[in-house]
Picture 1 (tube, rainbow, N blue to C red):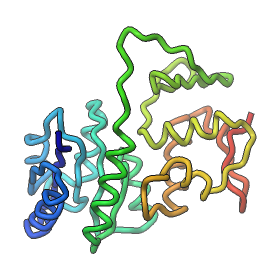
Picture 2 (cartoon, helix red, strand yellow; picture 1 turned 45 degrees about the horizontal axis):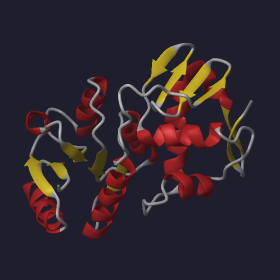
Picture 3 (cartoon, one colour; picture 1 turned 60 degrees about the horizontal axis):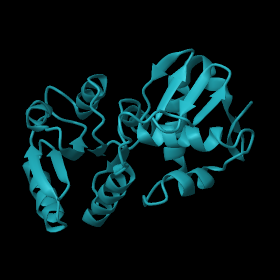
Picture 4 (cartoon, rainbow, N blue to C red; picture 1 turned 180 degrees about the horizontal axis):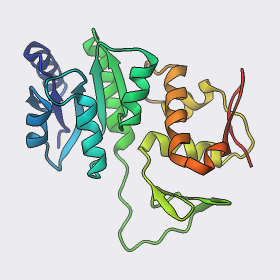
Length: 228
């Protein structure tokens, strides 16, 4: 069964280019020219959303934020001409999984789409199976089987990438991971990932950890570690 991709962009020519090329790669494509239209066309079996940032009444950021608040975790790749660090941080902070700057190459888009889909094709655990693998440090608990994190007994919502970064660091307490190490471990199948991408994910992860944010520390010039 082919993966279903929803393309959302108010520029029809971009939608047509992406639709043509991704369909040739074997994907099933649906297009929308506004966030409002996209929300109507989004279905439970949508595998991934390619989402423009700058649109009409509802921006791509607002659409992503709405989906995440409603519990929809469909992977999102932002497409935008805005490529400052603040723009990237905003995209990841509202639940984006990746960020591609315009103008882009079709090869880059296809590579990132395949990488995100591959990382999200994880077998679902049987409902009756109970978790037996936990990582616990003071007020934070990481359930490796249920893919859940609680801080002060309150469940927090992490993206798949954020969860993988947290687990990587927590499984090796006090070990320093360089940005290159984290890219190799977490984004091994994803091309074009930069060190700045690691930084914005760590920033968002620490914000979600709240009072436990200090568990993830930075050694300037070396990298990140889970400090206990």
